[in-house]
Length: 192
Image (tube, rainbow, N blue to C red; front, side):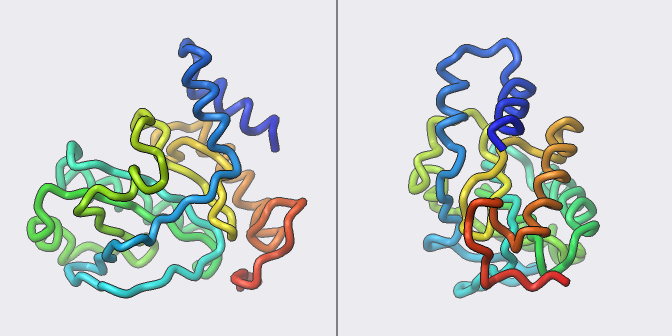
């Protein structure tokens, strides 16, 4: 696993200083809380109380600098990507801080987002509460295991190399009940 992390860091950081490399490598194994005080958006409906039961998660943070139409395109790509895995095993969670929740609801009204989840971060708490607010945006997409710990860093929709690493690690996590080999299998795992 450390080899995968080193390859990922090398690919993502080619040409960057060791300070960034140290920050990114320190994230491996960190537990991420993506549910804290936020709301889920299902089509155009805001849901206050929700739970995500899929053991393997890709969590991508998208800030308010990304326009709503660009976010909608990203969400479509996320849904296509996640469609290839067991529906009860892997979730693509997009945490979005929209400038206008109402405009986002209107945009999403006719979208098919059955394969991905949108969590609204209207107060901008996600990055702060997970101590991720000092990271460059390229380092705010993670593959999480069933214990919500970071397995890989990088966006599989924006890099072919990272996508290959994600595909390999997701298959390994599915085979091992949603956790890394050395950990106990998750009771959340439902894949056949």
